[in-house]
Amino acid sequence: MRLRIPSTPVMRRLIKRSMPTTLFGRSLLIIILPVALMQVAVTWVFFDAHWQAVTSRLSDGLAGDVAWAVESYMDDPSPQALAKLTNRAERSMSLSIALQPGRTLPVGRRPALFAVVDRSMEKALAARLDAPFWFDTTRYPAYVDIRVQTPQGVLRVLAPRERAIATQGHIFVLWMTIATLILTAISILFIRNQVRAIERLASAAEAFGLGVDAPAFKPHGAREVRQAAHAFLAMKSRIQRHIDQRTALLASVSHDLRTPLTRLKLELALAEPTSRTAEMKRDLSEMEHMIDEYLAFARGEGGEAVETISLKALIDEVSEGALRAGAEVQVAVDAELTCAVRPNALKRALSNLIMNAAVHGERIEVSASARPTGGVEIVVDDDGPGIPEARYEEAFKAFNRLDESRNQNEKGVGLGLAIARDVARGHGGDVTLARSPLGGLRAVVRLPG
Image (cartoon, rainbow, N blue to C red; front, side, top):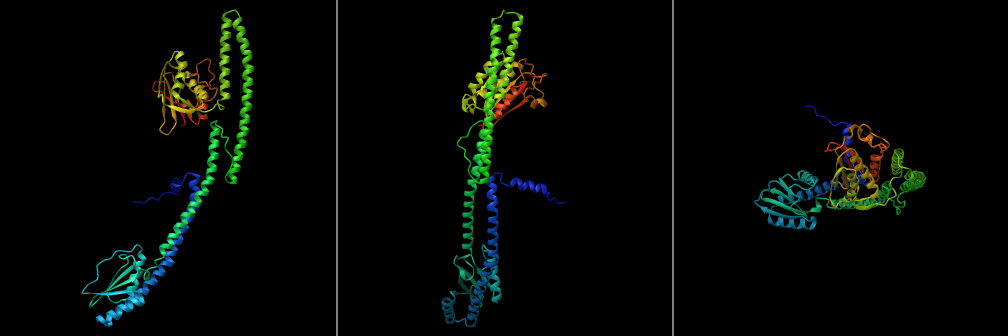
């Protein structure tokens, strides 16, 4: 069986997926990772080059003292000589020596936390002693237990731990850890301060895109972030001027167009009722409806304030128009369901969807529910002819009428779905189409929380 090694693109994708996705996480990784690698490298070099070398020298020195004590005892194993040897070793070398008559060496020992300690001690004792020996560096926190087999029994030597091991190594590691934590904390504070400026800029841009002004926003942070913030404010000012100019223009157009229409309607109302005047009234009504849709699409609802409303009350109000048009409307909305929206804009969007369903179908079902990920979802189903799935996106294009399926309404100008999607996206949501369980079209309005 051949072992397949992942290709380079696969490895790159795996690494990319494991990397942080936020600017804060990536900036922290850029700073912390090199520091952590440096600390690990320095610690490794310290233990490998310095701590191990010092431990080996200390072990070798202790092994020499133990060998001297064993040789001195073997030369004269009398109790008097042992007592003298014990006193001298305690006074001069801080070694505690005791004879255990008739004993033998223990079998096995517990390994030390750092294997280099046992290796250094075993190597030093093996080089200095000819007799069998045993040692333990873990049983006593402050001592090293060394035992040597003699004809009279076991000669036990307890040596201070600092005579065999460089005990200050953990202090070095502790200070390295503390330094790393301090550097990490400082990095987090500085990075967080810079990222916060970018987050505020993103929040202000998102709010402006949803039609909500953020007057308290002021550029701050690094020079590049302030430069981007000033560019955003300049762009916002230009867009706002354009919106104000368009609003003024539309108000003027609306007034100029409605004035002659009103005069014509008044003249027709005073004229003798004939078939021709009836046709002219229908033409004027259609023209007025078309002008209303054109202006609604061009004007939008960006200047309206956001309010938290009851969706059931809004949907019930919009559904009344479909009921008057003769459609059967069923509404399934929780009375407690609320959403922060621009009421008039959402009302216009839902009115377009529901009235569109009423024109092309006889049965309409409207439901609304909270989404698991946050926000709400409003669904409008009808039993009309529907739209081919391949033309769903085409139906959202402004002034587009799908004559062979949905838009047979003589008064329509192909703006209903376009206005609905524009309103939903202006709230940060969207409108999508699907096949309805009733056999017609399903329009799904998703709004953020």
